Image 1 (spheres, rainbow, N blue to C red):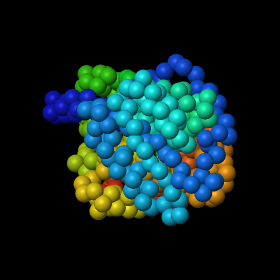
Image 2 (image 1 turned 30 degrees about the vertical axis):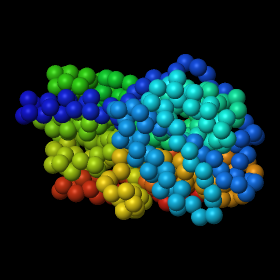
Image 3 (image 1 turned 180 degrees about the vertical axis):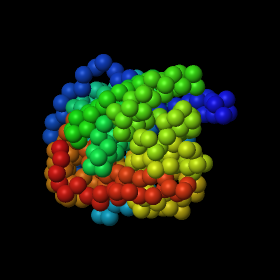
Length: 393
C-alpha cells in the first residue's frame, strides 16, 4: 500500500505553477507606503480607468495560466456596467527585473492600478518600482511575506483558511490541535497560520511535526505525533499538504498508522474538494476543510466556459477579482476611487469565488465555507458568508 501511494509524492514538482506563488521568497527591498493622491485618484473624471495587467505571457512554464488570467480579466471588464476600463496587458516573462520594468512602463503610459504579477518575487519587484508614484499593485501571489505598502496579494492564503477552520473547530469543542506540515516554506507558513489562528480562537497547538515529501519521513512524523493523539492531548490534526503534493499519501497512511478519523478530527488548510478520486481515502471521511462559495465559483466557471470554452485555471478567478474590485470602486464615482483607503473598504467586493476584501496590511480575507466528505460526497457544514458587513481592516 505504501509503495503504491509514494507516487503521489512524485507529483510535487507538477504543482510549481501554483505552489511557487507561495514558496518563492520575497525580495529584501522594503516597500514604500502608498499615498492616496496622484494616479490613484483616477476614475472620478469620467474617462476610462487605465488598468495594467502584468502576466508571464512568454514564460513557457506559466503561459497557460497567463492566458486564463487575461481571459478572466476581460470577462470581468465585460461585466462592468457604466464603468469604462482600459485594460492593457504587459508581459513579465516571469522575471522580477522584467516585472519591475514593465510596471514602470505601465505607469508612465497612464496606468492607475496594476493587477499582477503572478509570482511573489516579480510582484515585489513591480511594487517597489512604482511605490514612489502612489500606484497600488494587486498581485496574484498568495505569499503574505511580500504584502504591505502599495502591494496587495489576491491569492488565497493559509492564514485565511486556518482562521476559518480553526475557529469553526473551536466552536465545536475541538481546540487542542496537532499540526502535521510539509518541511518547506509553504508548510512552515501553514503551521504558523494555525498557531496564530489558534491563539485568536482560544485554541492551542499542542504538537507540530514536519515531514519531507517521502514516505519514510512521513511515517516517522506520524509516529512522533501519534502518542499525542492516542493520549487524548490533541483533538484535531491539521494538515497543510495539497493534492499536488503528498496529501493523498497522508490521508491513506495516517489511518493505516493508527491515526483514525474516529480518534482525531482531521482538518485541512487546502482545497480538498477538487479531487473526487481522493474522496474514498480513509482519512478524508468526516474531515473538515475550507472551500469558496459553490454558487459564486460555479457561476464564474460557467461564464468562462461559455465565453472561451474549456475550464479556467484555478488561479484565473484572481484576475476577475481584481477587475471587479476596481470596477466597483470606480463605479462609486469618488475622486479617490483607487486609493488605499478605498481598496481596503471593510465591506469588500464580490468576486469569482465569493466575497473578499483587502486588508490594510496587504493581505486579504475571503468568505470561505467549511465542508466535509461523507460517503464520497462533499457536504457543506457552514456556508460561506455572502458579505462582511463593513467590519474589519
